[in-house]
Every structure is written in C-alpha cells, then in structure tokens.
Length: 542
Ligand code: HEM
Image 1 (cartoon, protein in one colour):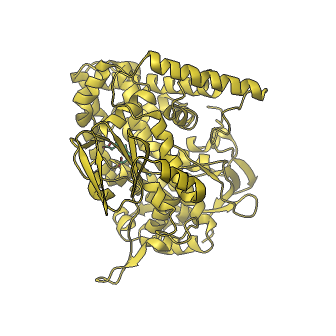
Image 2: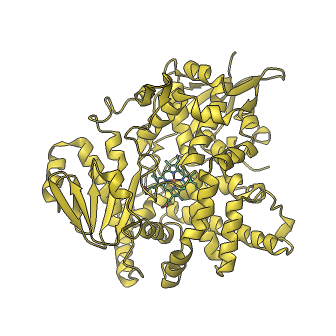
Image 3: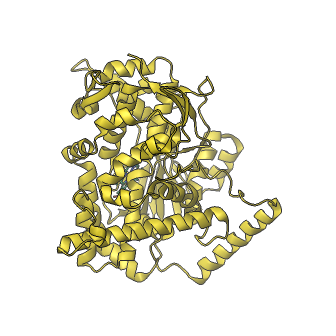
C-alpha cells in the first residue's frame, strides 16, 4: 500500500530550502545570468518562440490596469501604440478591453497563428527539444495529433459517454472514505491529510482532495486504468511539475536551475516523460498485435491516444519524444480543470444558502438511493445537468471569472490592421499579439463588485420561454477563435458532474468554524490558493 503523499499546494517561495537569504539571492542571480548566457549561446532554432518578457508583460498589464493610478499612466505613456493596444516593444502587443477582439481573433492561422505558442510551450516547458527537426515534426503533424483530442473532448455524446464510463455517479459516495487509515482510502484522498474527527466526520485539505478526485476521473479516460495503476506517483509528479516547474520555465528560468524545488520538479517531469513514453510503446505493441510489455491491459486506452499513437508510429516519432509531447495533452486535460473544481466547491459551500438552492435544482437530474447503509447516487441525467441547471452553470461561470486567468496569444503571420475606433494599428508579421481576457473579468465597469462571488450575474430569463438560463455574456474562459480551448465541453461537463455529486451527498464546513477564502496566486491558467483550505466533511443530512 502506498504511503500518503503530501502535495505541496503551491511553490510558497523560491527561496525555500535556503537557510541563508543572501546565498539564495546569489544563486538566483547566477541562475538568471546563466540562463541569459545560455539563451545567447544556444540561440533559439526558430524565430517564432514567444518571448519570455511577453509572458511577464501580460500579467503586468493586468496588474497595472487593475491598480490604475500612476503605474497605469506611465505604462500608457511609454507604450508603442494607443487606443486599446498596449505593449512596450514592437514584438508584442496586448489588446486590452478591445471591443473587436472576438472578430480579430477569429482570423485563420495563416494570418494569426497559435502554433508558434504551442511550439514555445512544448520546448520551453514540456521538455521537447528546440531543434529544426522537432520544429518540422510539429509543423507536419500538429493538426493530425490535435484532431483526435478535440474529438474526444468536444463531441457532446463522446464526452457524456466518457463521463459515464468513468463512473462519476458511483464515485460520489466515496469522495471521502470517512477513515484515516491509508489502506481504507481511495487514491484521491491520500494527498489530503485526512484526519478522523469522530465517526462519520473527517477533516481534509479540500484543494488536494478535490483536485485529485477530478484527476482520478479524467486521467484514465485518456490513458486507461493500467497507466494509472502502473504509475502510483502520477498525481504527485503531475502537480509537482505543474506547481513547481511550469510557471518558472514559462518566465525563462532554465530547467537545470540549481535549487531543490526545480531539481525535484525536473525529476518528476522526467518520470512523467518516461511513463508516457512507456505507455506509447505498449500502445504501439498492442496496435501491431505484438506481446505488450507486462501483459498490460490496453482495453480502455482512449481512441485519442490510439490515433495519436498511429500518427507517432507512422511518422517515426522516437518514443522519448512521444512522452515529452504527450505530456502537453495530459497537462491540458488536468491542469486547469481539476483546480477549478476546488474553487467551485469553495465558493459554493462558503456562500450562505447556496448549497440548498443548488440541491433543489439537482433533484431533477441526480437520483439518490437511500436503500444502502448510506445514500448513493444511482443515476445522473447529464443532458438535464448541462442544459437545465442554470444555477449550477452560473456558479461555474462565476468561478471561471474569479479563479481563471485566460489569454489568447497569437503570432502574426501576415501584415494586419487592427481597427480600434478612431485608431487604426498596423501589426507586422513576426509580432505577437495577446488578448488577456482576465482583465475584463475583474473590471468593475463590466462586472459590478468584481471581487465578490455573485453567480446571479450570469442568469437571465429567456424572453421566449420565460425560463432562467445561464449566459456567458462577455466572459471568455476558453479563449476565442479557431484556437480556443479544445477541451471545453469535457471540462465543463466534468466540473458540473463532479460538483453535482459532491453537493448531492456531502456537507462541507470550514475546520476553523468560519469560511476564509484563501488568497490567490497566478497559476498556469487557473489560480492557485496560497494555502490549502482545511474543511470538515460529513455525509449530507437529508
Ligand atoms: C476548466 C478547464 C479549462 C480551461 C479554463 C481551459 C482554458 C483554455 C484556454 C484559455 C486556452 C487558450 C485559448 C486561446 O488561445 O484562445 C486553451 C487551449 C487549449 N485547451 Fe483548454 N482549458 C481547460 C480544459 C481543457 C481540457 C480538459 C482539455 C483537453 C485536453 C483542453 C485542451 C486544450 C487545447 C488542446 C488547447 C489548444 C487549442 C489550440 O491552440 O487549438 N483544455 N484552454
């Protein structure tokens, strides 16, 4: 039996592990300097890599805008252009609250292209080599490799079938096992530092618990159960990579940086590469009718992974590269969705009266049986859940607004004009252009009282049917245009169904007696809490 794993919630401090602060600063200074020298010495093989400074400029623009005052005025004064277009260099322009953003972003990839960003992240973060050979592979195969992922995670009936297969319905009753013996716990409980308070009542870290609950539903749908069983550390490695390494690599800190957090995360990423590469080797053996390593069961590997494997095999992708490249898919599937489940639960349970309202709505699609020793969900009508539960949806939308920092980033391939009211801006090929949707999400002129959780702001009465409906309005959690999120349908249905099963069966209260929402730090899309939220969980009293 595996020992309980304590996930780190967030990288508390880059300095963790250094007893002497000045030594820490010296190490960081040397690392940054070495990083710059490395960048000069091993100049990027392609001109189309998203510049590190632009990664920092997007949150900076949002921060200055939300603060207003002198900082915002200085930023506006020194930018290259005017109107809605911000940007300190000619290489990167940011469209802030630009009313034509949707139309602008809907242009095809021959004009504004998302692939160079994907290439940047694959090579800067996921560990793929930045070589001309790899660039050629990406150019040749990206479309074919993305198509099966899009199909699995966007097609309505495939998404519903996948969630049914994942037994979300039954899993609700074992969200917690109400025991503090590791051998009694489900896999997703092991990171949550569970303590039995009294019979039928446990204390737990809600972020770790809900995040791993979601990941245990989602990951096998992509790679099958054998992958999960054969790789007991997968959750720990995944969140270590996501929390401790991803943001640092994005801002240009090299993977070889000599501090403990990076070393540990690098080892976690190497294990992920190796395990995914091993899986693709087994899939290939299975597809060729050869004996499969360990006699592994390949029967529930997703169609998406099977198709990707055929493309990798057909085009002679080395197995190591398959592992590196496919980490992007595993990450895309989980990194934003699972932390979002935590935020929905925290917002909903901490809002007085809301849980009861949602349970009323859920009565029509979640069937609960009381015949066994404890209540269990016997069925979920996924269609009603996603089409006729407007309050649940509005809670989700409001959570996206508060907990997510989406941006659409493109590379300009052809000269284009941005028509911006009285201004007309020319963008040359080679410019990067970003739309940080997060800026509007906290703008009080768009959302009154923007820091407060008010799901009703997304509810409208449909004038024709007279029914309450949840509408996205100006919210763009999935980005915009042809390169918008390819997993949004799955993410939304997974979040709705997991939140529905937890709400239907469990009471959750703050361990301290009063709800205190944790401060948020920017993560890799969805924000991270600065610390986990300790809660008390017991079965719902009917
Ligand atoms: C709550 C969860 C999620 C959020 C908030 C989210 C958000 C986003 C955003 C903002 C983008 C960039 C869109 C743009 O550039 O305009 C994106 C891209 C993408 N997402 Fe998601 N995502 C989520 C879940 C998923 C899932 C479950 C998958 C499934 C694998 C996925 C796959 C992708 C892919 C493949 C892209 C790149 C699309 C392209 O460039 O063509 N996402 N996502």
